[in-house]
Structures are given as structure tokens and as C-alpha cells.
Length: 314
Image 1 (spheres, rainbow, N blue to C red):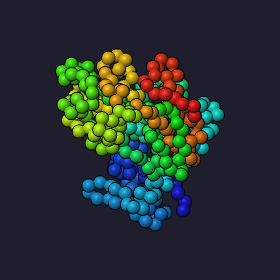
Image 2 (image 1 turned 90 degrees about the vertical axis):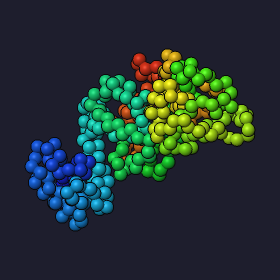
Image 3 (image 1 turned 60 degrees about the horizontal axis):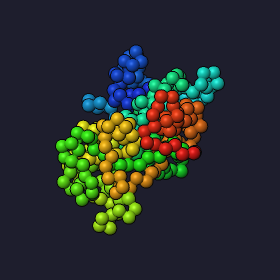
Image 4 (image 1 turned 135 degrees about the vertical axis):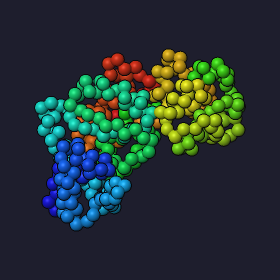
């Protein structure tokens, strides 16, 4: 198969946009030229890669397989070019990052100006989603994950630790009162996670369970499906939420949030990992990002105030 990498890149862009004409406009080329390029690819592969209907374009099963391999081929090309550029100008190129909305908003977004100042040739694409991505198929360079990291083809670097704590806004407590005992939570407005029911089981601290159960089952007055919205709802005074303490430190310091019942609920810490594909973790651009975010979470970056995360030794 004589594969033209530029045509493979065009195929991926058409798949992302779902439109031949949109891809053609980006390249300042006629749509007929884009159509012929895709036809050449399909002829090389001997299969149909895209369904074309009046409603738009979609990948066939074979097209989905081709896209996954095409991304890896283009990544390899870019890595080769970056390896030589790095000798001249430092880490460069696009870094595709998968991260939860909460971490994206509270860690990644504020860290980017200093990352770009240190490495002006870097570019970051942030995919903010609570779901677990397929890193190879979706072309993700780094996934920031909490808890555990699995996969034979993955390399995980621990960049911080985090715990969770119950918090409420001062305005909420002024209206509804401050709970002093877990029994009082039944009359309060709790904010829970609709996407991950396990997150609504709030584990007791050792020896503190009033009824012998391992966790308090939170029944939500308000529910949301992502961590960033959980923080926003809590800050808005909607109710009491169990929040990642990486998010809460700054808000507590300025009085926007008040921690609750810390002696009753488990505050043990779990790792935060930067997860990378085994064949990519040594790339200069990937190493530059992971090192920067480890330093950012530890408060080592100039002007950065730690937000409750510990940075253990690698």
C-alpha cells in the first residue's frame, strides 16, 4: 500500500468535520479535489472508508480502523520532526490532553500561561470529559487520571495526590445552618453525581461510622454528571458537595467554601497520574507537559499557590 500521509491527514480532518466542503475550505481547495483524494485512499485500501449520505459523512468500520492507524502514522511523522526541532528550539508541537472537566478548569487552564511561557513552541488541545478515553484510537498523548492507572501499553507517572472533603458555600450555611453531626445531613440539600453512583457513597473515617456501614449513602437534592459542575453548584450555594480537595483549597482560603465534618468522613489521599502510551512517554513535548503539571500541582511554579495537592517523589 502506497499511503500518502497528507491524504491520510485530510481523511482524518474530513472525519472530524463530517464534511468534504468544510475540509476543502480549510485547505483552500475545491471539494472535488478532496473527494478524489478520499477515493484514492479507498482504492489503495480496497474498502469503503466513509458512508456518504445527504445527511453527511460517517466512518465505516473499516474507516474507523484506518483512522486509528492513520493517527499513529501521523504522530510518528510529527514525533520525528519534533525530535530534530527539539535540538534547536526545545519541545514543540501539539499535545492532546484528556482530563476531567474539574481538573481542566481548576488545574490545566490556569497552568497553561506558564507552560507556554516556558515552552513557547508547545500547543495543547484539552479534551475535557469524565469518560475514560481510548488513548491509542483517539490520538491522546496524556490522560490525567485519579485512583489507578491500568493498561499493558501505558506508562503512568504519579504527579500528585488528592483527597475529598465535604464543603458548602458560606451563603448556603447562613441559610440552612452548619451540620455538626452526620445525622443532620438528612435535612440538608446534598449534591450528588449522576454519572458515577459510587461517588455518592461517602466513606467514613476509621472508627467513625454511626451504624457500622462503610459509607454514608448520599441522596441528592441536586445531581450532575461532571466534577466541574459539582464544584460550581456548591460554590453557588445550591447544597453540600463532596469535592476534590485540589479544587477546594483556594476557595476555602478566601472564604468561599467551608469544610464540613472532616473528622467524620475519610480524607485519605489517592494518586493522580499522568498516563501516556508506552511509545510516546519519552517525547520531549510530553515530558515537558507532565513535568510542568507535576510542578504546578506541588506549588513549585512561580506565583502558583498549592491547592491541597501533595507531590510525592516519582
